[in-house]
Image (cartoon, rainbow, N blue to C red):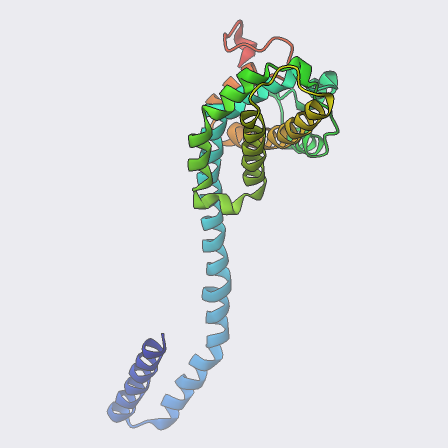
Amino acid sequence: MVRLAVLLVSVSAALYVVHYLIFRDLRTVLFYFVMDVAFLPVSVLVVGVIIESLLARRERRTVRNKLNMVIGAFFSEIGNRLLTTLTPAVDRREELREHLGVAGRWQKHDFDKAAAFARALDHTVDIGLLDLPALRDQLTGHRDFMVRLLENPLLLEHTQFTDLLWAIFHLCEELDYRPSLSDLPAADRAHLAGDTRRVYGQLAATWVEYAQHLKGAYPFLFALVVRTHPFQRDPSAVIMDDSSG
């Protein structure tokens, strides 16, 4: 950079000298030099602030789109099934349906309210309503996939999703370390309920934000989410009438 700066200044000085040698008018040279220097702050503003801001905004949008592709892969591979598996064991299901029942008519303010509700969700999980061996197999079967997700440098831009993956990993390890998941002591069941509760809260909040992204970017994928998400009484991918989306 120093060499480039010296080179550019030298070229500029040489051109001013050539101008003087040709026209022999020092006053004109000085006039244009002062004019150029006076315009320099405006050039810095345009190039260094406005254009840089536009480029940075475009870069952030590109990174966000790529990150949503990673999150989409997660929900397609395991996230949607995990949400469906855990929801029946969560209390306050009527409130979940009311606040998280994403519909095709939803607008930005609806998603914002749902995301705020999910982030502040105060819920409990009844471990007795879960098939713990099946849940363990479900998580361990996707462990390699989630490891590859964590290796993606894009996750540095989304700490919420990274925290979700770590919460799932922890639950997976808790279930995997136990030789048997039947007849567990009450204290151990309460511990597993707390780990599952942590996963569910973060999973629901991330899901709402991802559903909002799909509505704007991929309406055909959003239509499938509307039909199949677990925050409704009878989710089904089968389209029964035109109003199903």
